[in-house]
Length: 209
Image 1 (cartoon, rainbow, N blue to C red):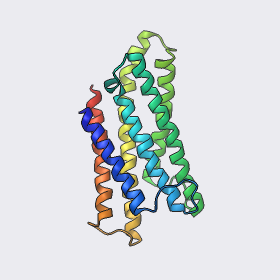
Image 2: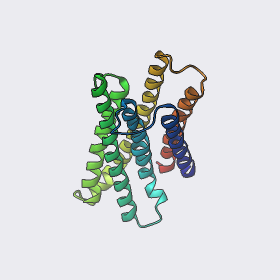
Image 3: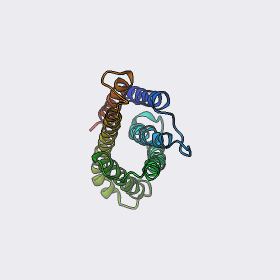
Image 4: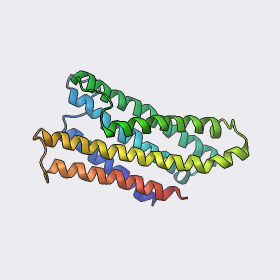
């Protein structure tokens, strides 16, 4: 299951990169082309946020070391995911400001911002309770299952945000006549969404119950 999680995670990354570089003008935060600025958002929210968050969840199974080291890798990958997620969110806010588009108006944006905020709280909770061990051993043992449950829920919320984001972009391009059913770009978007979904599914299977 772990190998399948890695496989679909990498497939999604490659497909997303092909889409953004070949079909969608490229990726550049400081570009004068607003579309290139926007593309930083899907790129970092998947490759920087979702993919790294999933890999962080797998760290306890994939890192060949003692539990303390595994925990450190887990927390570090999540922190990197948070930082890259902040940049990804900043990019879409910048794009909206340049194009005078309202912020946080869609279901995708509501799910995404809620997921990101809860993810940040989950990371702080994990840092204080498990890394710094501010809670007693008994308390840590009691809250650990809940920490895992919330982590899984947040990963699927992030996947849901990615799927709705792809659908939103696809619908927008279709409405402008820039995308038609069964074109290569349309199929590429769909396969990217499937790969992201399967990545989340196999991460969930891999971490156990």
